[in-house]
Length: 171
Length: 378
Figure (cartoon, rainbow over the protein chains, first blue to last red):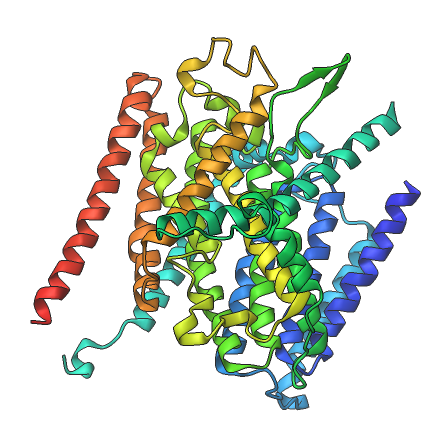
């Protein structure tokens, strides 16, 4: 148990450091890489909680696909060193949200709000791909389908946005 | 008992790394020999018998070469990038089983490193990490050609990862498990390459793109980008990229053999004979080795045969041919399995027929699209 606790604190330190690093680094590529490290640490947290499926999905989807696209866009636009001007006027919603979320988390930890939805004593067997898929396609079917529909809409939107105007090109 | 297990893991891990590293050296020899034979010349034949010492001579040369770091490069990333490329190439094979459980002096040897129930997902996760090495190498060199090579590789690998993932999905559907050993055992009656031929073809083409191998070696297209992402690298750092590419070839060949060509299992009609792995388990690793060598031969053959395809065609092919075809492959597999309770023929005959049909249809559509372009230009 102590070994796990030490590992947790080391990982937590890495996660927080990389998150802060992402925010303060001047170069956008380094910021993206800090975020990748952060995702990897979170994946290890999932592994520690006994869910290899979610851990590896995290690495594949966030660490792999999404962050690679981020890097791609940053490098393609040559936007490594663009400085955003931060003024209080622009930043106040973010500040309010951050404080609110932090307060919520502290309140939840202090009052020990019970976890809703999943049973607290999930076992390793529940985290295997088959039971996970079963609960996704039975208990959580509606949210699952709504998510897939949202993704479909986003995909069609992307295609429509990038479609070249045939009349404009003159061919 | 506990330390025996740990010792077993250490030995197996060490053995796997050693096999991949010496395998990489001799794969370069294998490729040069095969390529030269296909181009009607001898290839390396000076160092040792049949040029067998050539890889060692190359390694010694690379170790003594001067290493340069460009003045304007991002130093840390420049040094880390080759390492990020090599490590995934080696650890990706951890879930591939090399044979069935074997009894040696009363001790049960499990010939694989990790038997996790999300083995396939592990492979996709590691493969998606491998992209970073090439992108970062390109960017940190602070060289236009290198950056372009890195960007090309990103776009290409992300595009073909979709088709790769979907052909994995077809395998998962057919075997009903993400565990590599279950996938191998599910192929004891029939290889998935026979049951789902279009899936196997999509998988093999997508892996070529993931490997940046010819005809998809756009990130290092010599005429356009000199050497692409590794143009600023020299000495051992360059050797690491080289090592990663060839280790990945071996790793991908072993994964392809496992998910589509029966893994360590025999040809399916030899199942209950003395040549089957159920009766003679030690044949397992041998079968896997033979399959890997055949798949590597195929990769080298493709390199010797096909010219590099144009970059826009590469993207069109990935998104307009490979992705729809892999979606069709998934639907065909799912339909076949869903209809299996009505009549098993739906799975054993329906899937191969439908799969061949969608494959041929895709080839026909591509052919038609290209032909129209030829006429239009006249």
